[in-house]
Image 1 (tube, helix red, strand yellow):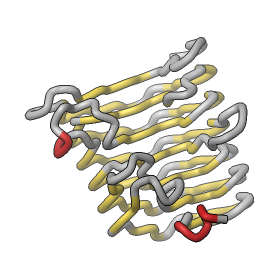
Image 2 (cartoon, one colour; image 1 turned 120 degrees about the vertical axis):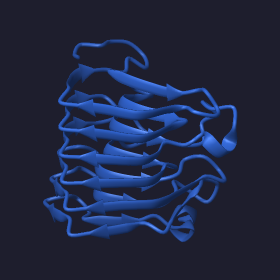
Image 3 (cartoon, one colour; image 1 turned 120 degrees about the horizontal axis):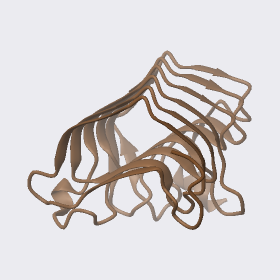
Length: 200
């Protein structure tokens, strides 16, 4: 999937809009997405009531915003309790040169945005704005029970791994673990955004 141009020109988009069953038992494996223009959206995204999924062995590169994203809290499902990507495995993907052109935001290679119960393991992310980010953009949302382990994170422009809400008005991150990741050559190896930092 390549050369998608224009605003929000995403490569693979999964929106779980049905509030009860949603979308489940989903596998996205072995795709290449490149030279796309997803900004202000994402090249590969699962959003809303999407659960019990595997995203693996994909190669995402040269996109102008987030590479791979898992989102909760944007209102895709009309039921707030199911409006969250959850119970997923994100494994053995490669993401490079996911960069936002312009001011005011950074593009992560892999972004967990208010999602829940996700394992992010054995991915290679390099030369993005941010390597791996666990965050919750929307107020009141919580990224929780996310495990980030055994990833290789190299030469990202802003940070290797970023943890926490964007500012005091955003959501939060709780009960997540970050273990056995290899970080090298990133501008900042690990950043934890706090309310105090946001106030500076």
